[in-house]
Image 1 (cartoon, helix red, strand yellow):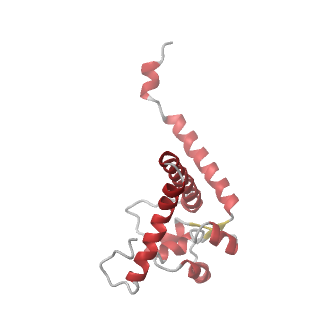
Image 2 (cartoon, rainbow, N blue to C red):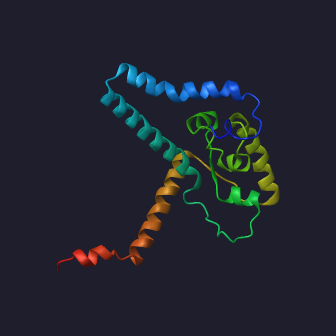
Image 3 (cartoon, rainbow, N blue to C red):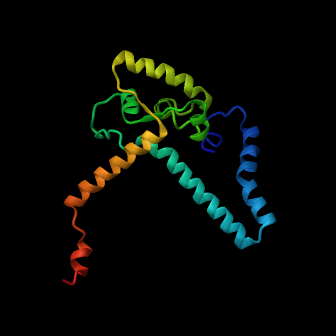
Length: 174
């Protein structure tokens, strides 16, 4: 949507607009055509919730537990993108499952690159990182979730040692 409605010239804008409108209206039209209104709203609500969970599960493996660079750090654009992103290995299956977000470093370096080209870009970026000694992080999806759980556990335990809930002191009776 953002690309099609931008001010700059879009070559096939009038072809893409109707395709986008069909894509965005198809689910609500079908739901309200074949289901009673309450059930149609519930169906769309569940579909959006499941989609939101799926998107969260697709985004989380790429950044959680990765280094967070201070805003004032003097790191070049390339290094910032590669150091703070984790790619997920798994070949074509992961490309489809995660919609290209498994190539997170390349997605950040080349945000407008077509998804099928990210694999080719990953090979080039990986070689460049090796040549210039920039750490390039790539792991499996399950290993990534393991890293996330350990990271959240460490953060949660650290916060628990130094955090006092103000409501706990107010509501404690003994």
